[in-house]
Image (cartoon, rainbow, N blue to C red; front, side, top):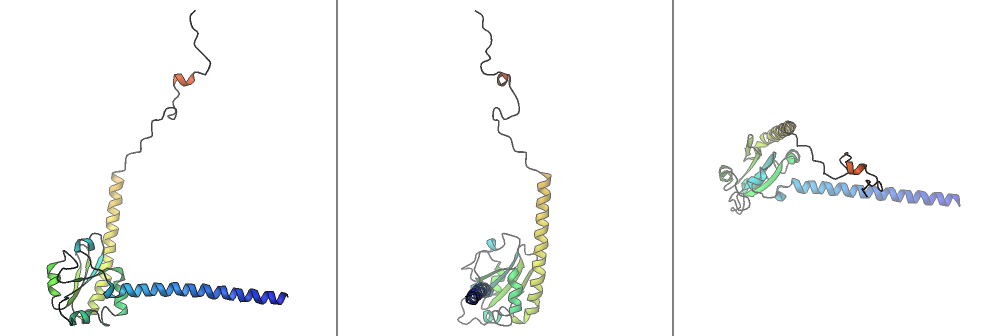
Amino acid sequence: MKMAVLIMAAVLATGLCSGAHAAFGGHRHNAEDQQKKQDDPQNWPARDFSSATSLIGAVCVFIRDPRPKTNHGAEELGGKDLLGNDEVRAKLRGFTRLKIKCDGSDGKGWPADWLARAKSGAVLVLFSSDRAHTVIIDKAAQKDALLKAADVIPKYVAEKRAAAEAQAKAEAAKNPPPPAEKPQIPGLDGKITQKDKKKPGNKEPQDE
């Protein structure tokens, strides 16, 4: 009887472990699938320039011409040597990744010279939101330049963000907020009035 109970307990424990492992594996695969989806330029969203640069950050925008039936430039940049490359995709995860058309139909306010360079083809632009650093890639052979920019720009952005936060803290220290006013509630201000000193039933003597 004891042996049967032990065997049943072992079977249940094995089943629970297998279920937990399967669940963990499922979550891991879901996260990997989601990451691959985000890495694929086909899934990058479009956005207006003002929105893309409203915060301090690193931005990567894939600009292509939608008119050619076969856009060889876009295919080259999106191929295995550049945006389809695992190393490149991993490097670009620190960027806000966007994709727009050079005719401005799905993203407003982008620099005209960037849009012009993408006509009849495509370009990839990596830049800091203040445009202090800008690198334009129009050939898959520029992978090394892209990887270098993918290192330099996020580092610059991190330093700029840290400086902005430090400045904000310094300004806050110079101008601290005024102390909050305590509500004026009778009897809670710590003062005892003459009226409060009188005890109930202790009346003043009256003249007859």
